[in-house]
Image 1 (cartoon, rainbow over the protein chains, first blue to last red):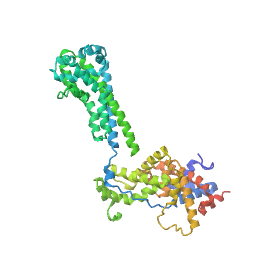
Image 2 (spheres, chains in turn yellow, blue):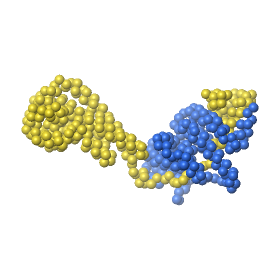
Image 3 (cartoon, one colour):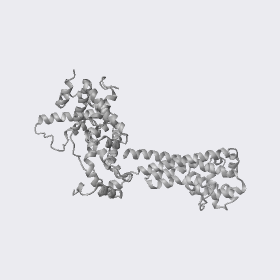
Image 4 (tube, each protein chain N blue to C red):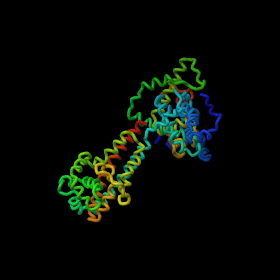
Amino acid sequence: MSEQGQVSTRDMEQLSAYLDGRLERSEAARLEARLSQDSQLRLELQELRATVRVLSSLPRIRPPRSFTLQPQAVGRHTGYPFLQLGTALATLSFLVVVGADLLVSRGAQPTQIADRLLAAPAAQPEAAAEVPALDQSLGLTPEGTPAAEAVGAAQGETDEFAQAQAESPAPTGTAQPETSKYRAGEVETAEPAAGEPAAAASDADATPAAPEPGREAELQAGAELPPASEPQELTTTEPVSSRRSAFLRAAEIGLGATALVLGVLTVRARRRA
Amino acid sequence: MGYDDRAVDEPVLIDAAQRGDLDAFNRLVLHYQELAFNVALRVMGEEAAAADATQEAFISAYRSLRGYRGGSFRSWLLRIVTNACYDELRRRKRRPAVSLEALAEDSEGEGWIGSSNPSDNPEAAAQRHELIDAIQNCLSGLPPEFRIVAVLVDVQGLDYDEAALSIGKPLGTVKSRLARARAKLRDCLKAYGELLPAEFRLQNEAVP
């Protein structure tokens, strides 16, 4: 790639380095020998030297203002690092849950219909078709005695059930409270909130939480799963996996939406910053 | 503002700033802002963009101060400045509204430092101005990664090693980018023939 058609890039580099005294002594000697015989090369060197001189003649400009930082400017975080972390956590949790879902659903496929019949019986046929129905019935169980009455509770309290459903057209319902929180700019809550469902998913069997009234289901879904699912195992084992996968699906959508919203906010924060 | 840069050791200031002392950091800012701004100015080509990049650089330097682990603070800072310039260039490319107006305004508003260019003779001053514009034009015509090296080494006078640290690239990269940049700049400057200093023109005409 010759700039003028006469001198190679390599020669150019040599001349340039030679100007700055950055050639090895032997290389410099070789170049000097060539320079003494090659007028074109000599001219090239002179032009380069003149170019450098012209560049270095550019005046120093006084900055138009001082760039010292004000305390409030430094304190006012754009939230960018937090958003970045939140996005990463949400995405990671999302992937984990998707992975878990794949594992669960692969194992549970054939029993799902039976689960649905057991857990959300004919009283609400269309509800049975909806995955969140299972979550919902879990939310209701604590009102009765935990064990076998779970199904009965779901059957008996259809009013409350329908109400709860109206309030939270899950699964997107799970995403809503989280995303609105982020919109409000409570960036600090992002990490725990994003991590929560994942933790709940992985510790599903290990952390029984205090039962809550059924209608506060959405976010507690993860926490309530254990107490309800353990007693269920007494009657049958299939609903556990089904409920788990229902929960996983809700978590997937929630986390997916969270990751997406956080991602968008992160890009915006970056642009603003 | 009562700051005296030389009164306090740089490492002491850095150490204090790392522990969150904003005053200490601001003394470093005062010490380096002229260099930072001038690098940014020659890379960005206009004052407003350079000021934005410089401000961004100092903010991000303050925030990432914990990441500084000794060595040349100047190089560490210049690396942040060059990154801020890249970011600013990218941003301006997205909305290129800044335009010629700003450029014209900018070149008129330049306040020179030092008295090596006494501009008592208006004609000479005007010519000098044209030359500066020409050089800046040529610089701005270079791809950013070449431009930054030319600014650091030829305009600011950094040596290769410091330039390498400042762009986070090996020495060889500095050498080759610099050679390419100089060759391109020479070709570009030739177009401004009569503005150039005599020695440049003479060499030029001496082509057999």
